Length: 326
Image (cartoon, rainbow, N blue to C red; front, side, top):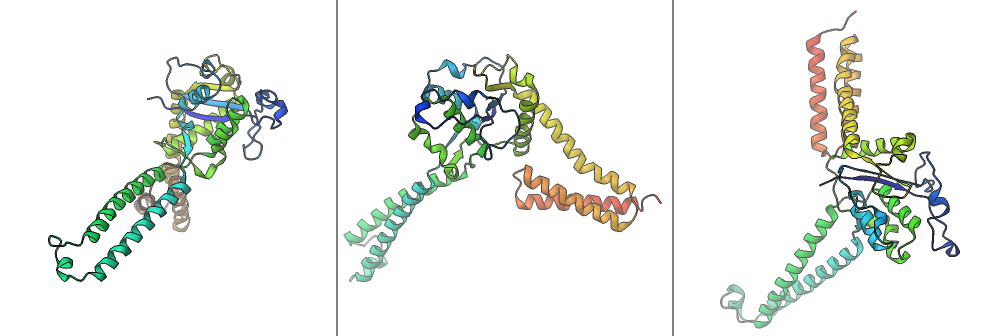
């Protein structure tokens, strides 16, 4: 399955209804090549996308405006698989089902307290209290319903939050095309309730790839004008080979790993004095732990073990290497 990463930043169209229906005019067409975060100036209008598959695919403009075209855009890139989680509604339903179980629990306790036949309380087989049997049956049904909802909520809550850049991308595309009802795209305004249903396999690769894409689109015109950008005929849509970018990104990550792991060894070998060497070990270990925490999804225990192991290796190296040159 092809993996795509996208960054759409389009100029916000005028909100004046008199300038509709074609909001794709004006700011949508004016190129802003400098890097300005969309939260500060969302008028940086370009669409940047990369894809890994080389086979020809239908262009976005081949579909009719409206949901056919919008669905094609979203389906063309995993980054655009953004939908609402409906956290409040799910919580409301869960609280309602929880309260129903609480009422049934109290009802069962009342029936047990008012039971006049001790034998019925001491044996399920000989219990002839119809009311208690009905309440227990209701509890069984309510618990099954409650457990199902809990599992569904857990599944939905495990999806990662949508990345603000991807949300802005869809917002700007919607504003630039003006082919969808405003009320039906208002879900994009609920940023804190949006989730991405596609997970990220490698967090470090994903982040560095996004930075590299930003750099290439803004600084190299041939990436913005290449005729092979075939996903869309819109001049604001840029597509280039994701496989090449991934190879470059992996090379950068490899270089960073070599720098983090080996440079401290070289420094320790070049300096003299135990105190200075200990300072280098502390700084190197702290830098490694920071990078692992930022770029990966490693758990706290895994980060701790990696930092401790790295620091131990450096200490053993210092102890075995002896004092540096005079």
